Length: 461
Picture 1 (tube, one colour):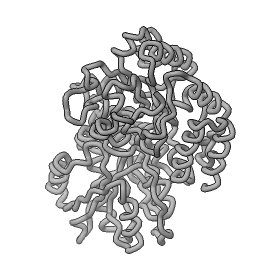
Picture 2: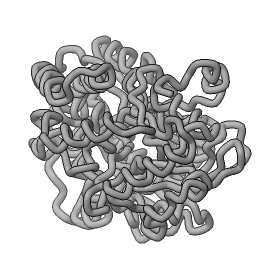
Picture 3: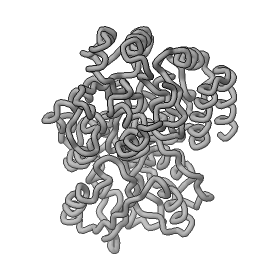
């Protein structure tokens, strides 16, 4: 059963989610226009807590553009928080939501026309590696002192910092992408013996044994290496990198390393397994739909958004359409310790040459990222706060009333790995990746395909 879509396509399309959540977690930013002149960056913080800058005369209205990130994609969720900010500061905020289909083009057009928004919400691949590196963003280093550095997740802060030390994104909330398994199916096949359910981990050896057991029980594909496009590709990257400890990019984020022999080993193992299909008819959202229907017994495109409510119809958390239990799992590795791909979102400020508006935008950033209001901002996202505390407010307990979130926070989030999405040439790299998987699925040599794909990605860098 190498092609899974067939007569299930109509049903799958109804249930398909946009690759692991409401958004493509790793969207490839489009090419930006030529850099504009920018002001000299503000001096770095002195280690003291920085008060929110007071808006100067005339800076009573700013504009914020928001990509559809978690609960921040819904105006009904966001507007009460914005109204409260306006009431407290006197600064009116004009909100506009972007779509991933054309959001980058809209921002680039606005930059060219010198009408960029004051604020933007998204991730480091856009705010840091794209617009920040091109000279359009304000360096926020002066807003992050030593206390902030101790409270902000280190991986998140590193991803929001450029190679020359400028901070172009203030991190707000984070997640780690993982796997989902159909626990009832695993139990029926006797494959649950290969799981460490206390820590939600498994070794590569036990992953292979589990797939063998599931295939023996069901006689069909139980997991799909989907490669129709880039949707949800963080799942296939994490699966392949974790199996034998391979890497996707170097630590300096200057080159791609897919041709790592450990990745060759992982892909050769997957390609030879009964029960695992390389399927060019599926993206991440299609895989989730088939998993949710009970057809696939595991999903490589998974995160807390699906775990909370995989059914967009809202029938309940952690269940398939048939009522089977879904359990989140770390990706398998040789020693059972995974390094997970993450989502890191936050706020950046465009340098439009108006210091009054920049100061007002900084008030917005301070309010939602480094004050007691950071708890509300993170909670409505349905992701986790990027920091443990803010100005004396404990942010580690905001989901204490949600057992699923707390469990995920304990066993999945700590394994957040390197945010290599900021590597040069990211847009080309993503396209080359799924094309490479398709070639391998069509029978081309694994090592040769990986070498060619890596060279293509690095050639675009």
